[in-house]
Image (cartoon, rainbow, N blue to C red; front, side, top):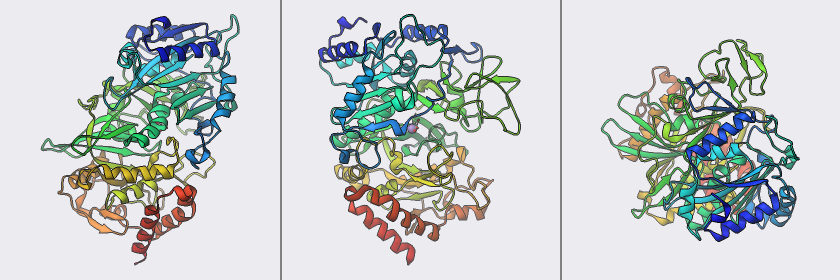
Amino acid sequence: MELKELKHKKLKKWIEDAVELMQPDNVYVCDGSKTEYERLSEQMVKEGLAIRLNAQKRPGCLLFRSDPSDVARVENRTFIASRTQDAAGPTNNWIDPVELKQTMTDLYRGCMRGRTMYVIPFSMGPVGSPIAKIGVEITDSAYVVINMHIMTRVGTRVLDALGGDGEFVPCYHSVGKPLKKGESDNGTWPCAPLEKKYISHFPETREIWSYGSGYGGNALLGKKCLALRIASVMARDEGWLAEHMLILKITNPQGKAKYIAGAFPSACGKTNLAMLVPTIPGWKVETVGDDIAWLKFGSDGRLYAINPEAGFFGVAPGTSEESNYNAMKTIEKNTIFTNVALTKDMDVWWEGIGYEPEGTLIDWTGKEWVYDKNKNNAPAAHPNSRFTTPASQCPSIAHEWEDPNGVPISAFLFGGRRAHTIPLVLESKNWLHGVFLGSIVGSEVTAAALDLKVGQVRRDPFAMLPFCGYHMGDYFKHWIHIARKTTPDKLPKIYFVNWFRKTDDDKWLWPGYGDNSRVLKWIFERCDGSGKAVETPIGNMPPLDAIDRPASVSAQDMEILLKVDTEGWLQEVDDIRRNHYPKFGDHLPKELYELLDEMEKGLRK
Ligand code: OXD
Ligand code: MN
């Protein structure tokens, strides 16, 4: 579509202003068609940016290799530029919005020279759903366009829904590498150096400005930027919830179904849980979403969730037939792989795929790589290498995954990667206590990527630390207040789970994966009014016989998994009181301190 054909005056003016600033060679409004996807894919193959994979083994699949400086979300270059620093809170990077816009306007000036500006109208949520939101991303990356095709609903149908004056979230994106006359990328991934990367959010005006990175959440602006950081602010203002949560459907042998949403920090197996294959006979788990949930109250007073995304942007390493059968099936076709290894027969490979590679590979940096049983060489696939794949291809996708009204949620899960102290499962005493549990979520650092010691607990409340667009203390308040919109019996029950307990000699106590269905079964039964529980100072817990024990777990280990570790919890209390809660200053709801005191008292009895 031509720019002049656009009916929406505000949108047209916004694009024209961007064209004047960024000075692209061409402007192209995306229609979202398969032909468009194919044409751009072919163009990138020709330019040497993409490799077409084996058409028999991986039909419709592409492989990209990014720049080694552009392989992940850049939290230290992500900004919440609210008018005041206090509004962004202590856990976000803040720059004054006027100053930041000035800096970025200077970077954007002429940034698309030699390139095409793509205009991507996209919907987060089924087009036309009362819960959905529309965004428009301007980008100079064809890689971003084809990824957005999979991750969101893109194109003319979105412009139709927008009409002449509908609301949209404007999103600027540029890889930050203008081309001189006659210059080309020459097959190398375009991006700007780290200190020039900015992933910026302006919560009051609901704008997103991203510069310098072409990768994942930095560049696919519907995901973390719109659906979490900006949407969390909208949700606070409009009385709903935008959460870093998977959504799954669980059905018992009698055919009764319930929906569960779960928040886990990155790298805790959310995608695996969302696509789990139960090990208990007769139970079924289906997928509604694997990363983000938007929740609103229905007229019946219950919370309904939609998955605002249309695809999965999953971590490849560790994904295998055993760990996630459904993901492996989903990515057999029409999938974009980024930074995985390439085999001789033009297929993909990564660490933890479940089999050894044959012969020499090409690693994610484009170099020859030989498999070493002793794992002495650097990984062939980048640890954060990804697949972008349509949710509709997932064998476990629930038929109602695109229901515009969402699915009614019976339970929320909060969890992290904790080797000690946190039991396999714990039920909150009530909503407020559930908010308390959400506020203290922590996960052990798995790689020395951050400035933290491996094994050290990083508190990540509600798994929203990198994704909340405002002060987290106020976010806790929002969670407390939202309960007033309905009656307690209509609210989801809240659970703390931990699949990652270890023995003192570093062995897993719980098998995880499909066996997590045993814990989901207990949660299902609790929500159904039949499951047994005992009250403890930390919450309600299943008695030993309430969870079907897998054959690989001894009765003794089950006792450890379901025991209240008084010493460990007292250390938690101390850490929360000293290091965690004080960060939020007087924004921290006093009710949460009261619950901390109450828990400590109970543990010392
Ligand atoms: C993700 C993340 O990519 O949470 O989903 O980091
Ligand atoms: Mn995520």
